[in-house]
Length: 137
Image 1: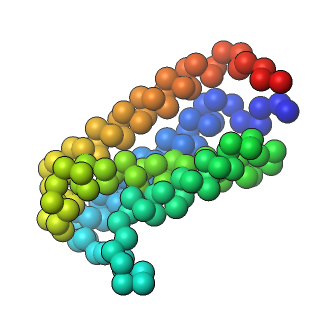
Image 2 (image 1 turned 180 degrees about the vertical axis):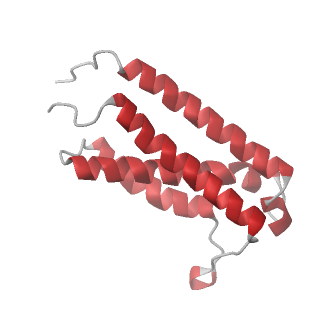
């Protein structure tokens, strides 16, 4: 199978949705206000929604989708879901997880640091993939 997307397209299809998702959520949280979702009476943080996007996308990518549209959707979902997960790690781990903590400085800085680290890893993988990928057959 020939590579259906270039490394730069792959990088952008993950990075842009990740950044837009984090920026959109942070803007919403800081401007509108914190609003929770309670399906079935349980509080569901956006970390969980991120997992619900990342897992199917990662599983699909593991089988190297042959259709370009499927690959693009998987990469976009991977980026958006990763953004949701990375945005909430510090909030859930390093704060008391109150509504005020959502818009606190530690939560925001933690989000920025984790997203920057993820983009750095993605950038390293991009640079490594620009060479000839190994043939695993």
